[in-house]
Image (tube, rainbow, N blue to C red; front, side):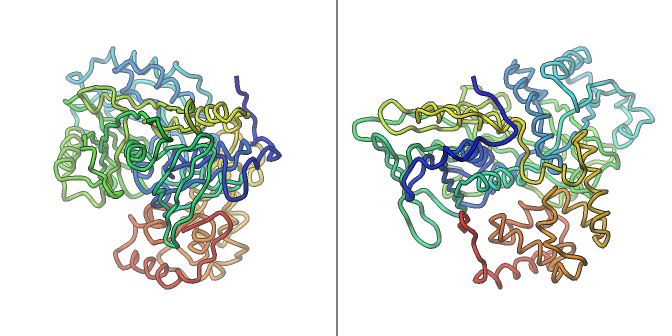
Length: 541
């Protein structure tokens, strides 16, 4: 049995390999890879992570951005998965209240979809499968005369309200990467593992980046390549002589989302039941917009060859508009869509015929009997990433003959410890509001909208971005509205930003608010300064 602590174990156990090697090589910089690297580094293991693109550049920045148990999974009797996810909600909310916060969901009742008694039973289970201290329980709601019923067709008169949480998914990955680096891990973006040869007691890998190739020795290998995990084992990882590496099969299921102008003024989200027994969400997004998603479209195994990015198709746009229009009084049309994004969920093939029914739980597959340790991550969902990483670190410790203490359950992610700003924490949602007040008092020259955006992105570390500034002028030129040179330099220096898209669509969603000309100004800033970048230790383009 492992125990949790509020900080990482002492680093005295760290170095166990030669300087040109590491204990564990992690392949993949999505939420699972970054989470595993963070957990391992915090236990004192020497870790290297290689990500072929940018952090969270695929699946982990393309989620519905919810910290949730998965209410609909109860219909598939996924009680263990739902309970595990529900247990993680408040753990995550406390770890980083600047990028995660509670969110209430309104479910209009449509008797043709599911009877009210079934929904009540499901919500009762949802409320009680795991302990809640922050999130309120579910309740019925009369939509007539309610702000929650105002945007809906008048046929919807009753509904239900329940709690889950919201997360900035791409920044969640970044915070795990930052924490991994601060615990000693070396992380490389835009670096591909082109070969990995297994030996009796170590792996020899080849890492390729823009500057060329270099070899790396690792005692163990973690395959956290997400949608490319199966391909990595079949095409890149080479078994030791005389043995084979058996692998699971993945089902690639595309989930697409559309963004439209704001459809309602309150702060709750909607969950809509569809005639095909699926659900979609309509969620307040970036103040001025509504996010609607998601779809479930199965893709062929070779759909992401060459790290191709998933794209929404016209049929998915039409489906999301049609289902949302079943509920909203003002129909949603394809012409209303201002932005789209799509991600591919790497789901473990469980022989289910319906992509919506494929399990969202994860499996950690280990191989250590006839060669150096190998751990592959199959499936998973963003809500359970911390638990997945903790389980993976336990397994790797066992395979390396040295299980070390777990530590992340009560630890903050970078920027999430607000005590220096607000004193003793109370509740994650109110703590953030107290942080906003404190930032306004310390930096009264910051425009409120900019102060709020910076607080949401960087939390307690906002002063690292401001870098001693006493006025807007001290932040340097305003490259685009609300985006100053000081912040861009911070993102390059500390957060691996190497291109305009890294900033506009992952480290922030400013691209959604900018015109084409404003986005181009950020692009030009990067193009003009690329040769001036100074890369700190452990950071690679």
